[in-house]
Length: 484
Image (tube, rainbow, N blue to C red; front, side):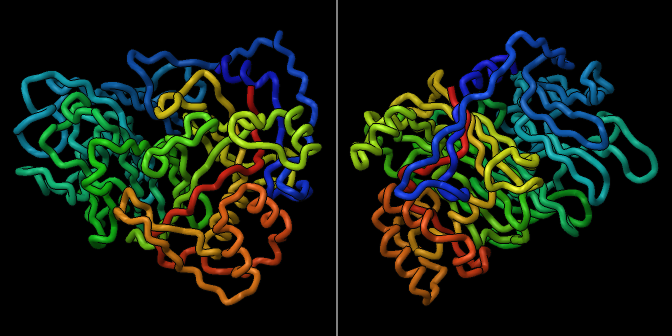
């Protein structure tokens, strides 16, 4: 907490290209002077110290639930003391969930149970799902209030599985939710409970080391499942309810799901993964790995409307920017004063306060994301970091524009193909001109088009047309950001 505030001492605010009032010609507006921070102020923040690393946190009805190694803690809102706790491991003292004896955590080797996901539910009962690394992908359900009386996190707990796959694990078992390399699980509730799940793929990460079974097939990479009305497990709607990393990339392609959230009609995931075929971009801060924002439609029980797009945090040195303006554009790469922070470390979505961001109304969703520059050719972060703020309406506008321009291809890591995918075909001259120009993938051309085309001039298309596609690389955009 302290280091985050210290890193933000020298704040630089840059307007994103889509915000009103941006300068034409691909340049950001001048940054306002950095705010004056009083570093002598002492903040007395409530704290709680767990016996093991805390890996996930959620809140329900004023209680904070923290998922840690071998523990689930229920904490008071002040975080001063635990109200209750539930032990999830080690496995020799706590029977794991999942299929029967055979290997992994079911053996005589004691394995710690890392908390991979912590998810709140409110439709049937007010409860909590905790998914651990030693439970072979199966989650535990903690009933916190069944309508008769409140319960502690340890009172009514059971493995959320209908018993399928107890003899032999299978990738298509819907009760196997999370993988041992990490996961993002998002509950989108309407009249039923939908779990949208992204399972990370980390080369060299052994399943047995994480508490799983080395011989078990990994659960699906990207999936959506619904809770059965019998409340004893999950079910897939069809074979189109999931996608998997292609076999050729298994074990060699890094795909880390870092954050997930729900806003409006969409569900979003943020990933760190290898860019293209692993070709680094010279001078761009370790361009072999980058961050992507994934969007699907929350109402889907099948993955029919999936699109992803690169997302970066960009810093431009003001002196170099002024010099570049005087020299009609200047050069590129790392010598033009542009710093790209390419790998996401953490993120959070919050409502904008009044006047907090230019062009953003009070109450609109804003994605705050902490990025780092990675080591060249590696996803490992360097000490150089930045925090960017992305208004979601601008992210959605970019999705719309790229899909309208047909500047999309199939996501190779899921399909094994780079074929062009064009689903939004609109017979408008504006769209056709965008298609011709955007295919150049040049930052100045792209920025100029975005600046000259007002939001009101775009046709209103259905954002949820059936499609599975990946937007081509975005070179550089101006954004709101805070940086060292």
